[in-house]
Length: 602
Image (cartoon, rainbow, N blue to C red; front, top):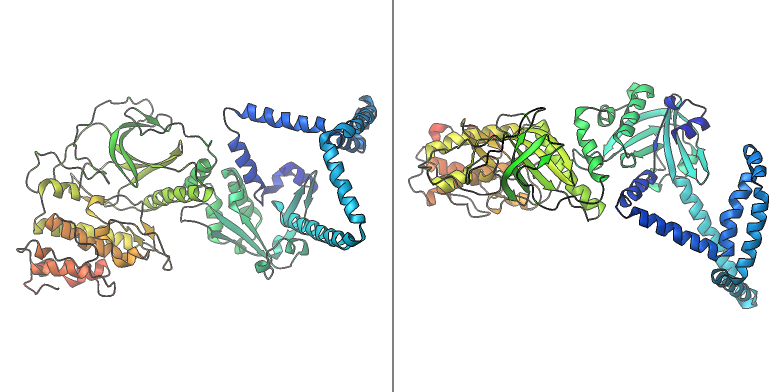
């Protein structure tokens, strides 16, 4: 296709970048994907068989299938010698003669002849002439609308040294439109359509002088603007995106290109997510395994070896695994039961009974050095549901990749395999705060204050991002205390960056969710509410009452009133009355003031 369009443009293929403009390419990929099955030979044999049967059962179809191609071949000067050598004129005459005979006996031809005769007889009746005249006019209008629709279906978009142009592809023809010179291009921008990590979006080229051929193809809402809107979903390979980015860098006037255009098209490390997106959506529509991963299972061609399942929940399944370097040997050490290992985000397990008091008990176990978190991507659903699940997985990967803080779990790899998404995370040797409290009982007040300082540290980092990152599930289950005493936050599956008061989904554990988050309007103050609820749990060993102001002093009377007041201020139901930021908490109460003998807020 590139060579053909380049020839029409009188350009060398290397000086002409051509990409799909409409969804023809996606339709082709979809068809190829659906027939990438074991019985595809049977399918195609069936298609060919039915087509042959229909062709040989109808003289009309046979004459069209044989006569028209031979007639077109005779009109091509370069094929005249071949035409005469094969005596195709005789073949055509014999075929048409056989087709004429066949048409007298074929039930298919008889049916169409009968229908045509009935229509002709009905049209000859004087009373029906107006009806058929109206029907003819309606048919003409329909054909005009079909033609107008074909004009809108510009199939390819090309960039050359001179400028931009679209092309229409109809059977046997590729018709390029007029060139829009680079000097007429006012701006080139990128409009994202999806989550922060979704590669879906549009590259929009706005130009000065209108071209009436292209105006025919624009929607009514876009007639006031001269623009090409290139949907990146129509580009089936990462190479096409990279070539488009290179062409824009090479030929477009620099002042017209917005900074995020080439960034979103270039082959940088961040675009591994784009490649994952394309790989996942074009993978064969069959899952190789429906079972959970077993010990010894290899992923990424042996790069990762699964040891054991660590946790399972609604947000995915976590496995202990080992990262194997080239030439390294797999250690088959088994994990002891109730190891109290880290990253156990959803299992709610307990520490071994040998743990006593408030010790942060940690057991070093096997050679597994990573945690692999698995998301099963839906397969037999509509494309939008599939894309939504994939986008959710990639959003977490993209967010973790950008976060760099010693209290946030580290992401080392991300990949899609067998319609499952995998995040490769650091292994934290420790236990969740919930596990520790369930095993050993509530924390002492002094220890809670030490943990509070670390919680404020990580929340301060998240909320200082631009735009702020709201975890939306800041609960004891998702805070892991490592053997080095460092508290780390995990499970960013429901975290999101808040932009322009975007309405989100309702997520989080009910005892730790404030009213605004239930309305899908989470803010940084929502994490503050969850912080207060988490402190209540650490001090009492009980989950707080959902949608209530928490007062741990009601459960633990010896607790200082200052700390109770702090937790109550963090869990106010009205966001305006709540301590809304880490800075407000630090500024409002110091460590000494926690123990102040002040009245408890009710």
